[in-house]
Image 1: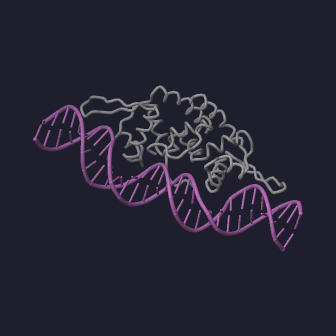
Image 2: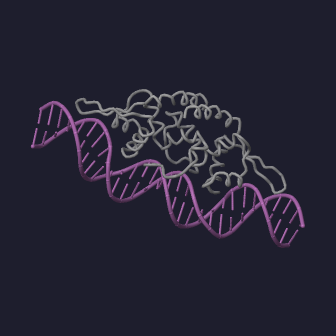
Length: 103
Length: 103
DNA sequence: GCAAAAAGTCAGAAAAATATGACTACTAAA
DNA sequence: TTTAGTAGTCATATTTTTCTGACTTTTTGC
């Protein structure tokens, strides 16, 4: 999913909006990890076993595009990039909590 | 998605559990419609424009399998089958509400 | 300048989800 | 017993998503 090609009814179904924001194999996991601490690419790649560069890269970009994650360049020894939750992203935390309680 | 083939980490990421229950192009919409009233197959097919028999059929079956919908055979003139939310399904309604408020 | 580490991109392959259209099964009424 | 309506299934095709492996870029330390 680079952009949305398939038309679905996010207009008529609000949950589909959120579900879409987090749709894809790795996004929910990325999101959850980002709740705890800022994420770095290679670290993420190692943490999420079974994933791959390409997919993570795309997922991160898309999460950024919809305003759930933000990217920060850290000028350290070998140069780091950190992804962390935006304010909008933080708004979703209680929803996740509620889901956890339910399931 | 007939059965789950791809291993993801629903164990470590609870939201992924719910997201998975409702993953797929039509499931969120089906769920939302089921909140209001029991669903019938052909009616659903007409209501969800752009969808198709095959996909709806699979989605309904899967929603049934995970215990969100239940099926009832109504012996009427031409024989009806109704899908409605289970108790478990109803538990999700507040989550959807919260999502609506958020987005 | 050269190596090494982080953070990717890119083209192509493989796998999974979704769509299409023909066909089936059941019931009831004519 | 034929017809009509509902609820599907099935094989196949198309589309979308995900994966693989090779390659690129940037920065710092030697």
